[in-house]
Length: 339
Length: 262
Image (cartoon, rainbow over all chains, first blue to last red; front, side, top):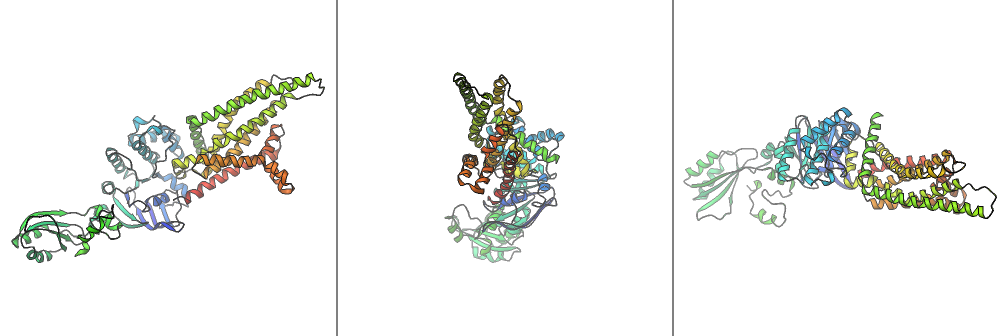
């Protein structure tokens, strides 16, 4: 349904996106994930026909977005970063206007507006001036205008920004319900959103798509981070070789923790894409005559994948928010590369 | 073609609707009606007094008081419009850019031309609405004269005023599409229109063929022709050209400028 090939966009000398390639199948929801300024909005603007690309092609439903702009525009619904709202209109008249300029025939208009109002739970606000709506409601009107003409392709730029938790759930459900009949691309920097709503995710960083896959296999493929965390009592050096030979073990690291005398904390990291046999781990420890106090499975999260792909040094559990926290974490860190 | 027409109508209706919802439109209308009403009475009095003086002085020649009155009043209306029109055109695109709704229009199956034409028609319609009460005043006064003034002359003067306004609004629409600040749009439009207003005088100062070209470009000169009841095709073509130029530049600038914004 959507085919993007080697798409680049430069502003002057700075490249907003470079060589972006991905495709979306009909009925699929693709999540566009990336830090702020990664090029999500630029890509979506090109897809919607708002911006021309510097090079490369983008096709929606078989039409090139710039050459067959009008054909593409008829087939997409687009919610930009800031919802485009005429604040001096009522919700209903605004949606009627959008339906009209999107080319919905006069006979279907009322029906389309009604269904968009229902889907976005705006029925009781239909006569309200948009100016008087709260941010959450405005965002919903923004989504309503993107779906009012029932387009095959829907492009949503950060659809859940500014909503309260309950509304976020509603919007996510709404987006999930759109799948099947519509092809949806949504951008977000909220990670759980992607794993909750999307069939596939494209991670974009500094203008490049660094990974495309289902959220699950992304986590499985790209992470050496899954494994077990063990709390053991006894001679840890004796057990270490035993654990090392177990199939799929990539690294064993000692974690520093506040523990009673004689106890240790170990982290066993699995090879990329393999599941560690927990039973064998436990057996090896017990057979060595050591005490096993805690055994906890560590699963790679999308956060880990995201950080690994979008951070230069790729510290696994690092908090990228603050630079100060980087150093101590790196020194005492047990990344996949450590072993 | 039918689709384009439907789009123009959709833009036109939305734009008009926003005038009715906008306090600024009511303020502009109020000020315009107040000022033009005052001048109407004032000019009417002056004209009547002048005729009375001429009579008292025993002047034998004919004074065409109704025509003189009409021309003075149309002149005043155009001067007031000079100040009002940039305010009407300033938000046509600047507001859309500020609100982000230009992104909606630009990603809808609507051409830039259709948007520009729809907007221009709407703002011209609003201006015509402003003129309607004036037309009523004039008809009341001028039909009472003996012999009555030719209705065609009155209408031609007003047609000239509307064409003048459309030309100014079209250029103002272009200026408005260049910025997302309505104030800047109003100031630049005012400067531009003032320049086109007095360009005739500038041309006379310069002289030669450049002066002649400047004279031809003057809004005021061509408007005065129409206001005097002279239907000159060159005036119509000039106003038409300004209107088309404004629409053309607007459509182009909307394209170009959205490409440059990050």
